[in-house]
Structure formats: C-alpha cells, structure tokens
Amino acid sequence: MPTLDHKPQPLMIAYGRGHLPLLMPPEAEVTTIRKRALPKLPDKAAAIYRALEAEPIGSPPLSVLAEGRSSACILICDITRPVPNRLFLRPMIETMVAAGIPLDRVTVLVATGLHRPNLGEELAELVGDPWVLAEVRIENHYARDEAGLVDLGRTATRGTPIKLNRHFVEADLRIATGLVEPHFMAGWSGGRKVIAPGVAGHETIRTFHSARFMEDPLAVQCNLIGNPLHEEQLEIVRTVGECYALNTVLDEDRDLVCVTFGEIIASHAAAVDFVASSTRVPVGRRFKTVVTSSAGYPLDKTYYQTIKGMVTPLDILEPGGTLIMASECSEGFGSDEFRAAQQRLVDLGPERFLATLMAKTLAEVDEWQTEMQLKSLRLGRVELYTTGLDEDDRAITGVNIVTNIDRAIEEAMSRVGDPAIAVIPEGPYVIPYA
Image 1 (cartoon, rainbow, N blue to C red):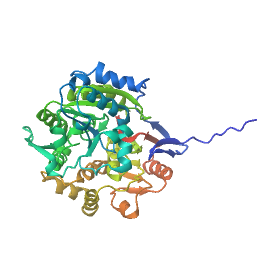
Image 2: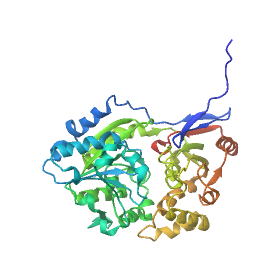
Image 3: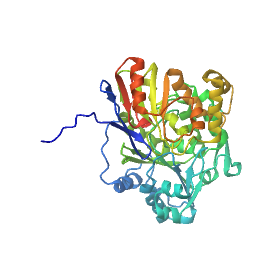
Image 4: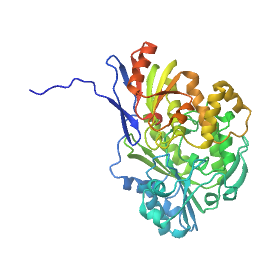
C-alpha cells in the first residue's frame, strides 16, 4: 500500500537562476499573488515578423523605414533586464541591410544609463546571438563621457538637461528595444525610457533622480498620467525627433507573449495596454506580513537592484507590518557610489538622510536607490534573506538581515499576531494593490 506524504509542500519564489522554497507554518493563511497568465506565442519568429513588417504601430514597416538610410543605431537594455535580444536583433539588422543600410553602419548600443558596461561573456549573454556579436558593431553607453554626448538643450517644462549618446542622436535610423514591465518611478519601463535615462548623460540622469522628481506622489509604478519622469522622457524623445521602438512583454517563465514595433510613443503605449491588466493584481486587502522576491536573475544580481522589490508591494503592506525580501545578490552590493549612499543612510538615519537630498538639483550617482528604500522603511519593518552579501555589505543595507527565511516568516506571524501572509513569487514584475 503506498505511503501518503502529508507534509506541506513548499512555495517557490524566484531566486537567482532558480527558485527558493518557502515552507510555511501549518497555521499560515497564505495568499499567493501572481500575474494573470497570458497566452504564449506559438511562433515567436512569426510574431516578430508581424510586428516589424505586417502590423507596425504608427509607422511604416521596418523594411520601408530603412530604405534610403545611411546608418542605424539600435538600443538594447543592459544585463539588468531579461530582454530576449536573441529573438529579434538579427531579423531587424538583416531587414535593414536588405533595404540598403551597410552592415558596418549599423550600431547596437547597450543602454547602460549609469550602470557599468557589459563586456566579455556577459555581453555575449546579453546579445544572445553569435552572428550579431561577430558581425555588428556593439558599443556600451558611458554616461560620464562628455565627448560621446550631444547637448540638445533643456526641456521646456522642468529644465532637465538633454544630453544623449552621439551614436544614437546622429544615426539616420534610431530604434530603441526593451522590456515593458512595471517601473517603480517611471511607471513602466521600455520605449522612451531606453533613451532617457538609458543613453543619457549623467546630468540628465541625476536630474531625473533628484528628490523633486522621486518624492512626487505620481512618480510610481504603473502610472503614466501626470508622472513627471514620464512627461520629461516624452519631451526628450520629441526633441530628438524621429524614433522607433520594439517592445517586448514576458510571462513568468520569461517567454515572449507580446511584441510591438513602430513609432516609439505609440508602440510603447500599445505594449503597456497589453500588459497592464495582467500585471496589476487587485488583492482587496492589506497584510501584516508580505514575502516577496527580487524576481530572480538578472534583477537580483545586486542589492542595488533588489530595492525595487522592496517598493512595489507597499500598497498591500499594513503600516507597521513586516516585508520579507529574498534576493541572491550574486554580484554583491552594487556601485561604490551606492555603497557610499547606504553608509550615509546608516550613519544619519532615514529622516536626516532624506533632508540632505531635498535641496539638491542633481542627485549623487546611485543615491536615488537609497532614497527609494526610504519608502519601505517609513512604512514597516524590512527583512532581507540573501546568500550573496558579506558582513560589511550586510551592515549597510539599512534593513534587518535574516539567515533562515522560514523562521523569519514564522517570527513575523508571531510578532504581529496574524496568520495571514501574502507571497509574491515574481517580486517587482507583479504589482498588487489593495
């Protein structure tokens, strides 16, 4: 007679390149929050062809756009975004070349913002196509290289300096590519965001990340209406002139479920319309204990990126509750500038640290992520489970470190006296709201 195993099965949340099991206490009342499942594309290559040639949005097909052009620049996101570049870069480039653009006049530009460059094996992983890597010019954007930037003045609305990468500005055909997902400041990633801050100069980026933008109540995930960052990005795109975009949407398995191409603003809006209803998940209540992830690799490579996952679930966290974050941090902490900002946070405390930011026109590099962390610290207790940070790193996270996530969940339940727990396996790719 078979033996029945009545042991509770663990929940799995995204962690590194795999998953982390969570074994809940027997008395736990668990609400698991996931995106609404979207139908997978049966033929990804055919879907990309349709987007580029048969169903472009607000523009002619790519083959027509490329006619008579002397050069092209294609922006791709850096390694922090799991964009399926391997699926579309070669078809795009071959279409351009067939239309008459010389192959040696096509540049693929990695939109690093102020992140480090992607080189070597990491660049090969990012591009995902050996032919593109071997045959096409690939460059990283360097936001602090003034010689590599073109000054286009300032925005009329808020005076943001507009300095952008020369390869992109001076190309005859300009195309941004990216992933449309919730972004905790700009509303949604992709489209215009790949240009600014993606290939913007450091002054542009540091203006975007100053307190006057980041403390604006409309600069939040999934909101474009009245969002000052989004409005500035649109003005910058219009200043540049003719731009196009290929936008992708992925499901929880990182499979392509939507691709749009066309005029940059219109094609991005179409992708946002597609994904918004599945990503924003109504929950109907708040919880005193919330467990979430940093969405796994590549978003949980550093503690810097981890903070995104600390902000996106705040609408369902009861004030004074506990937010437990799991993030591998396989690459460690982040930049030296971010480390310095975190040290100031620990030394000054949240209130004094924020006071130092409010008077600045330009934020210091990477201190904006520390500022975003304040939003979760103001609301409740934040705990971090990680296997990738050393003791020095852990000391300046500004949050409580836990070494056993199952025990941390049990202790959080006991501390608040409530068995109800919300679990968000895919972290910041899911936006729950009460």
